[in-house]
Amino acid sequence: MQILLDSAIIEEARQAAAWGWVNSATTNPTLLAKSSLPPAETLRELGKILTGQIFYQLTGKDLQAMQTEAAQAYDILGEQLVLKIPATSLGFQAAARLSQKYSVAVTTIFTPAQAMLAAAAGARYALYYHNRAKRLLPDGQGEHLAEDLVRVLDGTDTQVTAASLKSPQEIVEARMAGVPILSAPFAVLAQMPEHPLCEQAVAEFDANGTGLLNS
Ligand code: G3P
Image (cartoon, rainbow, N blue to C red; front, side, top):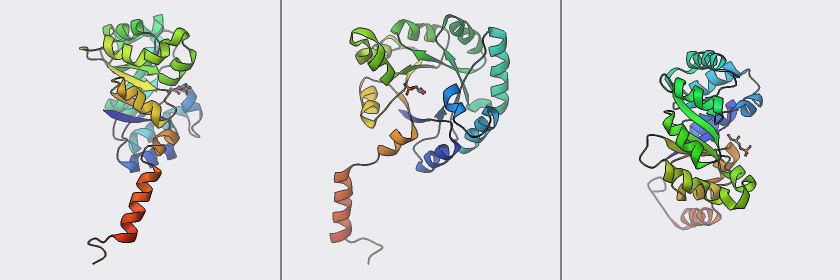
């Protein structure tokens, strides 16, 4: 299981890296637009701060442009790069070509059929939007999307990856559906270690207990 930071904010990446249980980040064009640095510099900094994968989403509008953009991203991030490619007809064509050279994540997946194409195109990750799917897909399809994606990708080399996770509860929900990789915003990750009963128990240990540092 892996927990990633869904952000392109450098300070958030620094704090998340200090936690020690996050070493990778997912970005997208909207997240990159929130960085105070230009995209290339943001990616370079993220790659220095975090030791794991940095997901960068292609914005090119044809195969040639996507190929050029992928090479630019690889120049910046090297083996840390995971190319995110939207699950469109053009995106699947690009994924099939680029996955021969780069690590690829097909993103914005909203159906099991798209996840199957991601696997057939050689993507290592099939990334879906957990909260958005629950809110926007008709007939409650979003409620079981995570589970459906895990089932159709069982036995393949493509791992389901959840984004659009709005609370620690949604992270748990996706995990309980079998999702192995979970990417959430900084504010959501920051809530994960906390529980008032834990704080209470620690306060009791501090008040009544002793240890090596006290003796
Ligand atoms: O990285 C995916 C994320 O940015 C989309 O989530 O919150 O717009 O549904 P959201």
